[in-house]
Image 1 (tube, one colour):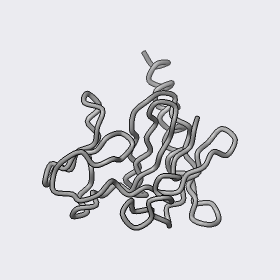
Image 2 (tube, helix red, strand yellow):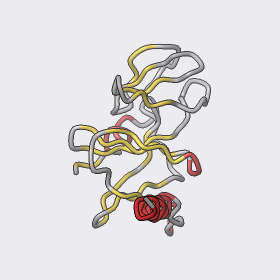
Image 3 (cartoon, rainbow, N blue to C red):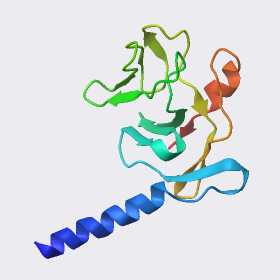
Length: 139
């Protein structure tokens, strides 16, 4: 049992180190490439990282309606705002609710075996449609 406990402790430490990696020059944060589809939340940096159908996107954690932290509903494969029930696809596309636009995307790029997300820039789908559409990478 202690071997298993040591393994879990060491693995958690490595994973935490990857998520708490220091900011790189230019406001970029490094993240490991997710192994499978789903969403991972980095509350410390207010980032949601999503892998879906061979693509990856990074989103601002807050709902564009009233800045409430969004929740990933893995069993339904979508996001939802707990405050007013706005719903979004894994790609951040608005489905229904009080919000009036898609989730805000962050610039993302692949660098070797990791994803780099610029936490200092945001693309809003209604103000910069081409920037928003381009803020995704093929894995």
